[in-house]
Image 1 (cartoon, rainbow, N blue to C red):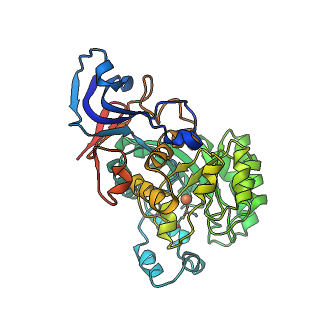
Image 2: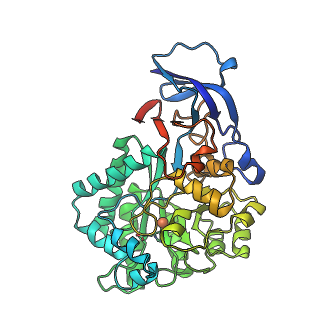
Image 3: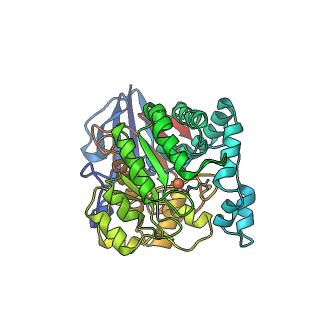
Length: 409
Ligand code: NIG
Ligand code: FE
C-alpha cells in the first residue's frame, strides 16, 4: 500500500541524529516549507520539499490543505489504564486540601487501586480504550503505559494485558510494570511487599513489560528499595524508569543516574546537583508539568538549568486519574512554554525524537525521514508554534499510524 500526502504547508521532519537532542539541537526541528511525504507499506520513502520529491504514484492520495505536519507525538509517561475517576479530589484540592492529605486518608492512588481491582478485564479495557482514543485525538501515536493500580499479581497482570490490548486502537504501547507505586492496603509492611514484588511478581510479569518503575518518595519507597528493585529487574532483562523528586528532593535524580536507570521522571524538586549528575549519565529526564498543574503546585522542574546542562529533556503527560487528568501533549507543550520557558521547537522535540530516545526507539519513530515509521499528524494549523499556543483546542486533523489513518476530525 502506497500513500502520498501532498500540499503540506509546513513539514516538521525532526531530521537529525537518532538520539536525544541536547541544548541548541533541540531547536533544530528540520522545518520544510511546502513539503510532501511518500509512504510505502507503512514506512517513509520520502519526506522533504515538494520541489525535490521524486515522482510517485500512490494508491491513497491525501491533501494536507496547506497545513502543518509533524511526527506523531510520543507520550513517554502515562498511567492510562485505570478504572473510575477522581474528579471529586480535583475539586477538593481547589478548597486547599493537598494531594498528600488526600492520599493520607486513603484516597489518591489507593482509591484508584480499589476501583481497578474491582473492574473486570472487559470493563477495564472499555474504560482504558476511551483514554487511548483521547490520546490519539490529541496527536499521540505511541505511549508508554504503566501498571501500578493493582498492587497484587492478578490485577497487575490484568492491567498489563489491557495495556497491550489497547494497540487495537492504533496506538503503539510500551508497557512498564509499576508494582512499586504504593504499598497495598492489606497489611503488609513495605519490606514484605517489596520482597513479594521481587520474588513473586517480577518473574511473572516480566514477559508482559519492557520496563519497571518505582515511586521513590517519602511514605512510598526509598533509595535502598530502588537499588534492590532495579537489580532484580535488570537480572530479568527489564529496563528501569523511576518516579523521583516529585514532592520533595530526596536525591532521586542522582540515585537514578547511579543506578543507570533509563529515565528519571518528574524532578520538580531535584536540586541542581542532582540534575547535573544526569549530565554525566545516560539517564534521560522526563518532565511532567501537567501533574504540577493537577496538584495545584507552582513548582515546575528547573528547565533553565537542564538547558544549561544540555540534557536531552522529554515532556510527557503523566496521564492518570489523580495528579494529571489529561491525555493531551499539546496542553503539556503549552505548560512547558508558558511555565517553564521552553521554546515551541524545544517542546516539540521533547515530545517526539527525545521521547522516542527515552523509549529506545529513536531509530524507528520520532522523526519523519526515509526508513522510519509513517507515524504522523496533520494539524489544523499553519505554523508549529500554534500547537502550544491554542490552549485547549483540538487541532489534530488527521492522525496516521504506519501509513494508516487512525483518526480524522
Ligand atoms: O506520577 N506519583 C505517583 N504517581 C502518579 C500519580 C498517580 C495517582 O495519583 O493516581 C504521578 O503523579
Ligand atoms: Fe506518573
